[in-house]
Image 1 (tube, helix red, strand yellow):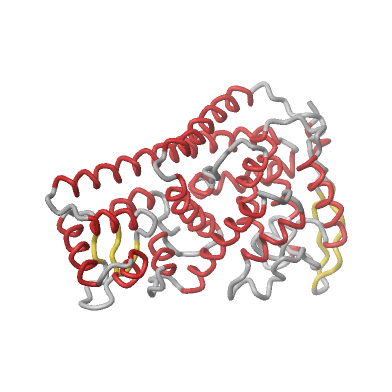
Image 2 (cartoon, one colour):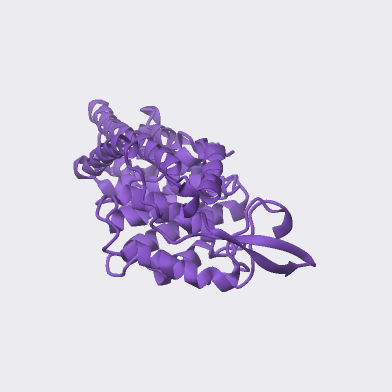
Amino acid sequence: MDKKSRVGHFVKGSAVAGENYHAYVPKPLPPVPPLDMTNLFPLLDQASTAMGRLDGMSLVLPDASLFLYMYIRKEAVLSSQIEGTQSSLSDLLLFESEEAPGAPIDDVTEVSCYVAAMNYGLERMKDFPLSLRLIKEIHEKLMNNARGGNKQPGEFRSSQNWLGGVSPGTATFVPPPPEYLMDNLNTFETFLHDPAVKLPALVKAALAHVQFETIHPFLDGNGRLGRLLITFILCHEGVLRQPLLYLSLYLKTHRQRYYELLQLVRETGDWERWIEFFLTGVIETAEQASETAQAIVALFAQDKDTIHNSGKSTAAVLAIHYYLQSHPVTTTRKIKTALEVSLPTVLRSLKALEDLGIVKEITGKDRNKVFMYDQFISLLNKGTEPL
């Protein structure tokens, strides 16, 4: 198979500061000649099985929305870390609790905007197609922070960008010039909805991710939005009932190989090797997510039993334990307001949960205390240590 015919072409860019450069314009999707699926089918079967198992978890979880609430935040932290933020999951949860985070405030705000963009896209897709218009709307939410305000939020770029290097002439990769952008994006949107494209949803998502990163249509935020796009496509295609698959931990762990394979597709047209890597990531990620969901369900049940068997089981203690499942970093004030109970009741109940080893006070202060559902955070924290 002559994969070279899948490779795009280079165009001479307008001089930037007197420096000439060449920008890459990709071929439209799907690849021609068509993908050789021979080695991909076994991985595709495994990935589909792992995805089915993960999707089934959303039916057996006592409250899928609680798991999803925390899992989306973990993904936001990981995806933002790939782009260089130093925020941890605990930092984000402290920020959302309106407590001073340990990480730089701009980092945490950026991660918080990722959560907002993800939730907005998922909600909007219930009655609006995955389209260029929606991608722009999601980008606006994503960039709604101090760092993104001057990067044309919600607008496709009108100037040249590049990856690596201090200028297009020294860059590792230069995406299409602005005058080629809309042609590339229109064929990309057509690919997303073309009924003639008979590809498995996972393969479609793998192709779309690389194409989006190659077009690089925004001045900033392309990496994060490109990773979100994977989940949006799988939900749009009906592969997932709940948006439970996020590849950022896998891509963070293998980030050097990830960048190499993106470039390999552009240089050689070897889409198959990228898809192998992508499907392996889906298998690993889906299995990890299923295991994490099961471990969280087991933890909640075990802690509930501990409360019941402790002699400290009151309606308030059980209510606070349930509240902590969706707010694992919180304050006495927030619990008091949410559950409409008195402050002495909250303090007494939290003391009982502390004595049982279920919650931990993390400030060491006498006033304005912050409590954390420690083991729950530990389960979610795996892999989210800042780079």
